[in-house]
Image (cartoon, rainbow, N blue to C red):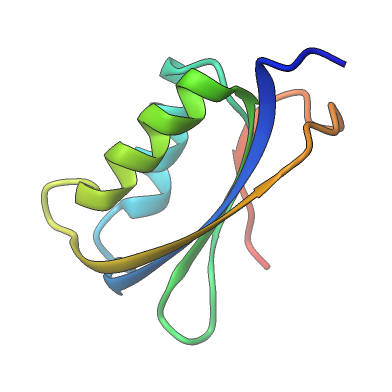
Length: 95
C-alpha cells in the first residue's frame, strides 16, 4: 500500500450546520483530490470521512478549522486511519 495515502475522520463542532458547510467541504475535498463523504449529525456537528494523499488530508484539516465564511468552528476532532480505497468520489450524505 502507498504510504502517502491515508484516511482522516473529522468531527466539526460550532455553528457548522445551515451555513453551507457540507457543500463547501465537498468542493474543497474535490479541489484537493480527496474521496469520501460529509454529513450533518443530529447533535449539530458535521462529520467528514476523507481519503487520499496525506498532504491533501492535512490541507483539508486546516481548511476545516476555518470552514466556509458563515461558519463558526469552535473545535474539531480528528482520527487518522488507513486508506481503504472504497470511495470513488466525494459526496454529501443525508444520513
